[in-house]
Amino acid sequence: MNTFIKTVLVFAVFAAVGCGGNNTPDKNEKAKEKASMKVKGIIGVSVLTLTNPFFKVIGDTIKEQAEKAGYSVEVVSGEFDVAKQQSQVKDFLVKKVVAIVLCPCDSRSIGAVIQEANKAGVPVFTADIACLASDAKVVTHIATDNFEGGKQAGIATIEAMGEAGGKVAVLDFRQAESCILRVKGFKEVIDAHNKKNPKAQITIVAELPGDGKKDKSQSATEDVLQTHPDLAAIFAINDPSALGARAALERANKADAVKIIGFDGQPDGKQAIKEGKIFADPVQFPDKIGQQTVAAMLDYFDGKTPPKEVLIPTGLYKKADAMKDPELK
Image (cartoon, rainbow, N blue to C red; front, side, top):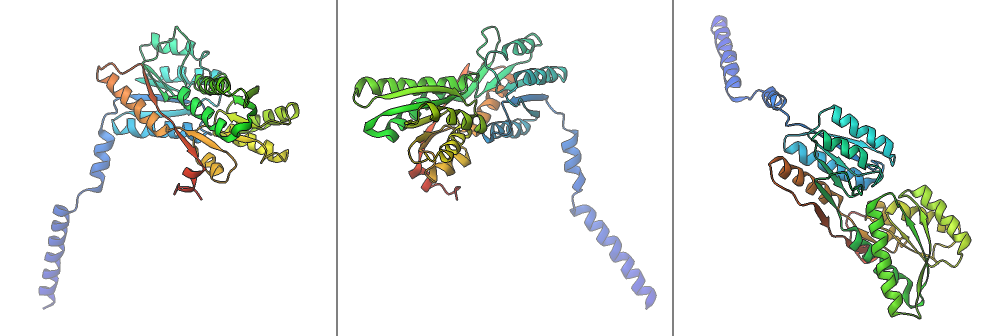
């Protein structure tokens, strides 16, 4: 009896092992297959700064989309330092990348190192911020329609200030082509308003370098309040600048007296709009910028000629939008 039971058990064990071998896939097979897949090449990405959520979304989206297409992606941060960014591009060239994507720290100074990439035969794409150096060749520039976004900011400013008009300060970032366009669009709308409304003039009394940073924009706002205590509104070229301006106004007990118009539509900017701290934002879509950048690269790799420029429209975001936004508190 014992011998019979042992025989049955042994047979059952072998049968179970046999069944398991036939029906249970090797868990390592997919990992081995993935590891053995040949990467098509490395794409180097250097953004203005990864501390700003806008640029982090661009970098993350490029990485995700390009990796799906079989490429390895290295994303680094220039941290507003064009010399550092130039060094990063040179490092990409040493690594034999197949393409480079830049959100330039300086639209003109970045030109020299882009020319080095041109000489090495490495295609360069710019996202959000364009290169303005005439001798540097960029395959495609993908960005927000910043000029039209600036016009939307101008429209929001006129609405915020009402019929009285008044003084406006601009917190700009003159090293970035995208921000130059925003201010240009803003001024066009304000100028047109002034021509039609001589009794409700809006006067730009100061253009100060906030450089897209909260702390620097706070300091700049504190300075302009000393010179123009009757300031009525501020146009800030991004949300960190707008939030810096808000901090300065709160510190000066002028939070209710001065309207702020930002730009971006970052989560903290939208939250500030909901709370009434910022009047409105032309909203950007950094995920779309990242997606369109990868699409242009893949077209280029396939031998197609992508467009020289791809512009993505903004949408004006106000408190009514924020109150319906499920992502906000």
